[in-house]
Length: 463
Ligand code: ATP
Ligand code: MG
Image (tube, rainbow, N blue to C red; front, side, top):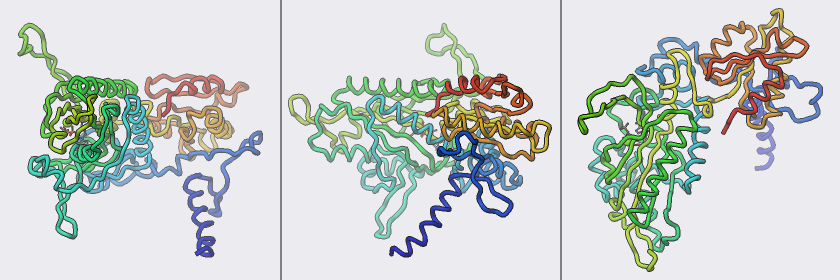
């Protein structure tokens, strides 16, 4: 065993090293270390993220039109995300999430974790492969109809790929026969996982997939009153979450659908212009009707599932009682696409600042241009930012495609929506170097010294 491992490890390590570090290549094809400023050469230098080495837009942007049209192009976010190499269609309603999208999703998941844990949510992980028995008990095996993706195992047993987890989580809690009221409210949420729904018309890219990521939380309470309080605190956490992302979100009363229960709200990102009509309820006011994308959904369930699965707790008098429940979904992939849908122009992607795959893109001058010498300053700046501002570690890319003009690369950076684009041009060669900074969220352009830059970027919130 060991000799083989000894042979394999150095090779595996080399490969890992190569993919993670993005070193420059010499003409002979061997990897060279990235340039190291003299003053810091003895310390460990973080690798520079080079645009030319990212498996991302640069390679996919130029893909041929027919590949681009493989998926049905039905809305702005889908078109922009495919063109920018953020997603790639696989089969109807399913996508490859490319590296920049995964970075963004991981950030969104961290913000969601913070908000859910902020109200006492505890994370668990439940199987996606669920037995039919569970779903027959709740009646939803039949109720869900064709939307439920069903399969059989080799023994002929019926299963489904879970579209949601009310049945599974309630069964889990029901197994604990001694659940004490002291543990309640009990808020369990699932590690953000894929959900499966055989949507009749999967479309609009990540907005309506057959396989998509959802955050689902389930609450167990001692009384109806307590359950309403929990419901309210989850709604507040959702509102905080969208505010942190800088997304305008409205909470609207909603239908409880096949989940059942008595009270439900949708969280929607408004799109489109609004229509005004007379209010049919009060007749005196005006009703503003506007379209929105549903990004979250909350339900007060009462005892609908807890009764069926016998999810009980021991109350203050040590007597067994059926728990009050709620369930709360957030469409993780849909939030990402919906944010792009509402924030972007037809040509340029804009992200909620916190979720941009990379925060900063630094542009050195074109090779052979009059200000060629500023290239070193651009590289130094990338290192300084990473070393000085811990929040920006791994967030700064260097657009090393110096065979292209600054203008062309600026256009690309604009399309991809890095929140901050920094150009090292003529100003960088002045006695006190100054860099051009474009804040893409606001459209502002500034000329800042290195200290000014550090001050500005030190205030950027990352997650
Ligand atoms: P819709 O009405 O859009 O079909 P839903 O009401 O069936 O959605 P829920 O069961 O409330 O969806 O799921 C919780 C959240 O999961 C939704 O608010 C939405 O953000 C997301 N979601 C639901 N279906 C999809 C899908 N097919 N693709 C992507 N996200 C989805
Ligand atoms: Mg819904």
